[in-house]
Length: 178
Image 1 (cartoon, rainbow, N blue to C red):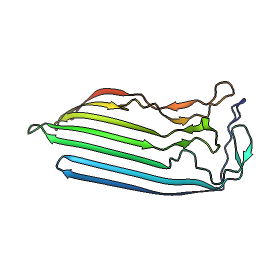
Image 2 (cartoon, rainbow, N blue to C red; image 1 turned 90 degrees about the vertical axis):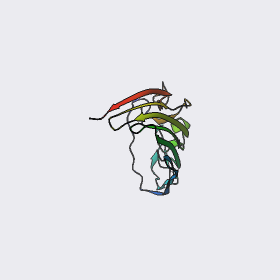
Image 3 (cartoon, rainbow, N blue to C red; image 1 turned 60 degrees about the vertical axis):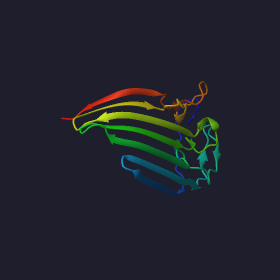
Image 4 (tube, rainbow, N blue to C red; image 1 turned 90 degrees about the horizontal axis):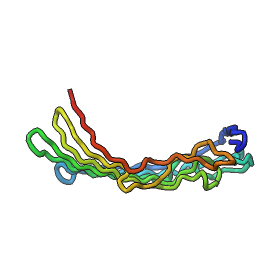
């Protein structure tokens, strides 16, 4: 992207390679308790990108660089316990943890275009029947400040414009089934 005129640079790499693995494990050690774990690894690199260009318009060789928006590691864990409270009412509590490794918005090594790794924890507590459900939630419970994107609106006056994650939020959800 040209910093003054806001023109975009779109270039195709001659080749890239993505090698990875994803592993998931789900267990129920006791009735009502579910534990789910997931891990992902990807090595996403350009194996031929000799005509890359920086935001300043300088050509360089990005062969071997990480493909943008490809976190090397991701991990998530979910623990939920559910049990009947009465013959028709079930209660549950759930916790979810997520980790996303750092990513880059483009191929340059400009740190303004780096999205650091982040971790998020969410919690829910609720009750339900066949006809209705009521649950309370807290998302981003520890109020992690994170960003997951950098827009292409960078200018010579304002610097990189980032997309930030949601701050801690909480609420109640009521559901009716007809």
